[in-house]
Image 1 (cartoon, rainbow, N blue to C red):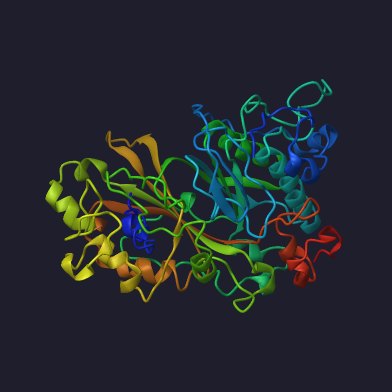
Image 2 (spheres, one colour; image 1 turned 90 degrees about the horizontal axis):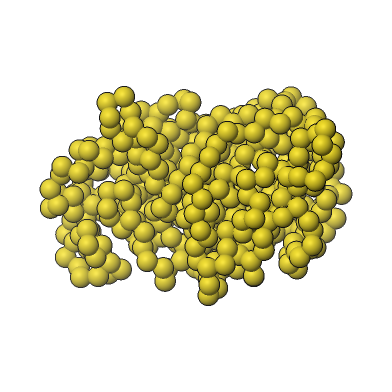
Amino acid sequence: MTDTTNNTSTTEATDETGGTGGSTDRNDSPAGRNEETADSISRAPSRRSLIGWGGAGLALGAAAAGGAVAMARNGDDTEPTAASTGAAVAFHGTNQAGIATPVQDRLHFAAFDVKTTDRAAFVQLLKDWTEAARRMTAGHAVGEGAYGGLAEAPPDDTGEALGLKPSRLTLTIGFGPSLFDKFGLADRRPEALVDLPKFAGDNLDGNRSGGDLCVQACADDPQVAVHAIRNLARIGFGKVVIRWSQLGFGKTSSTTPEAQTPRNLMGFKDGTRNIAGTETDRLKKFVWVEEKDGPAWMVDGSYLVARRIRMNIETWDRTSLQEQEDIFGRDKGEGAPVGKAKERDRPFLKAMKPDAHVRLAHPDTNAGATLLRRGYSFTDGTDGLGRLDAGLFFLAYQRDVRKGFIPVQRSLATDALNEYIQHVGSAVFAVPPGVRDKDDWWGRTLFSKDSKDSKSSTNSTNSKEA
């Protein structure tokens, strides 16, 4: 929804930001890898080691959809290529892919709880996950593949993505506040990784909130995204377990300004003034953690707030058009602000009703607070009364949660949109910097004794682990 869902999310998050290479077919053989994958994909864990992981896969299905506009880029972002080829997004980069990267059409987001108490085993899991992610984002199967190996052992890959293109798959990992209560990490928890306060109207379900860590899988083919989370969960069997997950479709914001602005399930354009992946100045100011922010291991990372926002669809659908437009502060057709003619015209906030969503979520109302939003719509069937369980899965990246999401969400306490939405799930994560090269791995800067080497990927795996 225009960001309606996050309260903070919504259109203005959208608008006002506030609111919150060629294709490769996935196969088991290393043949035909492109340059990025050839020098970055090392051997995945063997089938014999996989037996130790166990074969507990997620029994999740998803309708296959064709890859949409292909984008070739590095982890920091980039430019659309011409055709819909299902191209791969580079896994290595200064920042993790899946943040400033042009937004894909589908999402599978999973939050995990850590079950192991063995620090070394958890670090090894992060390395194994990194290797699997490297292969899957390049369009290759995990390990030795889904068939053709030892008949007495489970295959390394579950196989449902065989023959599918990479579909611009990105995998982005984050660490929740509760992880820092484990493995002696308490003194490494960033000050900006705060527990979110209770906001007006929250009705949070503990079973859909929190998590020690998360993985965000975005792709243009839903089966590719589901395959990625399923295989990571399988590799993690016995060490981590999925706490909750969310499938999403129909991106509700865009990091590509020249693209058509998406609409949320309330029918309004969402993300008109979202931060673009090409706006390096705004990314630097509002999204990426800098050295002066601290801690050192988070430099070039970001902070993610995830909110599951249910929409009262049936009530909204019986609301007059005029009231809907007053609630958002934009017209439903063009998406223009009140009193303006075009969607991207600068809003005149005082022309809107005091409780209009755009007015309350706009950076000018919140001391400049700006979020990079990557939300998705969701529909999870119906409740016991026949009402759609549908809404916005709000995802927002920022440099500091205390200066981003929290003030914006507090501003939205009087939002007229609150009558039609309810926040039912919530989580916050520290998203570490990108994996720099084939020797680097997710979380290295956190688990190394000397995180100062985080800026140099050279010999990164040789750094001592805490």
